[in-house]
Length: 107
Image (tube, rainbow, N blue to C red; front, top):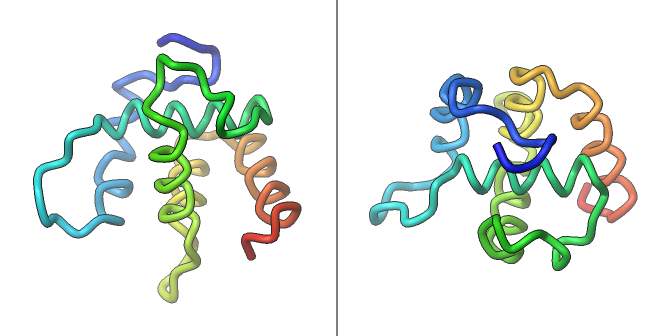
């Protein structure tokens, strides 16, 4: 782990399949979703701007794209992001995410 907001690989293994389900498998993935998810947690936890994401993480635009994809409301239940934040016991991060969505007008 690089930052206090990061989760471990072991914790990530419990949510990886949920995150992977959001994307159609058209070609092999070149990014490690573990890094993308930790970058997302960093932004949600710190409140930093997307463009201020540390260089240790994937590019901010890529992380933001996944944020939007994982935040989409689903007809069959909660968004992917809501599911994984709850599953990883990141309740405060989940609440920040809800606040961010309302503030930035995503929903």
